Length: 567
Image (cartoon, rainbow, N blue to C red):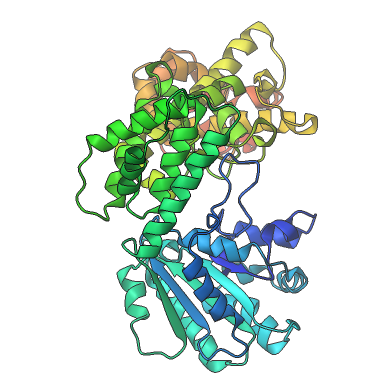
């Protein structure tokens, strides 16, 4: 994100993005373009396999009570609370437990965005003044008793690795609290103990309190134990659970799981999800697999969550059959591991990604069936709207370490998929010529009827753009790659496109040899006839004297006395 915005990680108790964006208000659609996906407390669809994290009943009682005390004080002197703890300790669950109670201030947002739509692109301080100072201080739109709670979860992830914006946001909030002590706002920030954030909160300022959640604390250990024991009780009580053992799990097995989790809720929750996922077998055999991993494990330290999770993720991946492993990897490269600059993979639904991969629903869901414990996968009914999400950030980190060349492979996959799409078009157009080449594309997912033609066109033009813009294209031309040569015969071309490989003399020689290009003296061209067949011709004129070319096709690009035409 180049221009950090205040609302990216802010979750207001009067703002529920889901509520205000469900209608036709265009201001909110524009607002959402400048937010980080999943930042809002209610952005996690209930259709996903994994529900948003909340505190397990009966856990984190002491921490929640301290947060309640902070938020319930009638006129608190300190109006900023910092919840700090390691990754996987349960900060997000605590934040979501509070965020679930709050509603929206959309009327002010609608007015503000209508007057100045560009506000979301301005400096952070200006945005803060527009979205916080103006409504809650100058206009005093909040009329309720008590304070308004603003939750900022995952501050350490905001604009990472550039950490300057994190401290800038904290400074803006602190200055606001000092300048407007009567403002009806309370701030709760959750983050890891990153050096820059820790340094900021080490300053002697009388505006904040601190709650530290330690993995070694008695509360952490007791809470994780309660969660694990309650989960095993729930599994045993399931009607589908079948076990002929006199005791399952044994106390020794529970103790092993507890020692392995070591106070980390994230590790405990992923372990339980693995045990009860039917794709790995029954819970008894899944627990045995997990215990086998634990028995062979060695850790760098008692708080080495990453090492513990890596071994658990390795176990999960080892359960994926070889016959579908490559297809599972393709889905990961197109979703979780996609290059952030990709126009194809990013901000598209699960169904769109699968269309691009030419993967029908039964194959897509089959290829992901062993990853339900670590991924939230949209249901078939929601697949055309929602994206795949990781259950915990640690799985994304694990994948990046597992696939060190992930972005390169993601780009290559994008190119190869474009070739496959255009190969379908080429083959179908030979059998059944029709004016709109995009009509040859077959859709595999249940798009609504009015949108089907649009998605066909989007796939066709996206594939064409990838081939035209890729650095791979010239190399494939020079190797006379059949799939690429066929793609060039049917891909979409626009009169504004100029691509290096078409102006390269070596490429021109090969394409002319393959009868994809023709080199014709300008004097022999009948422009009027060519213009009537625009969709099938593309003309570049390269001439010393532009007056030699018809005005309809003038485009001087260098020296030479010939024109190049792509059929």
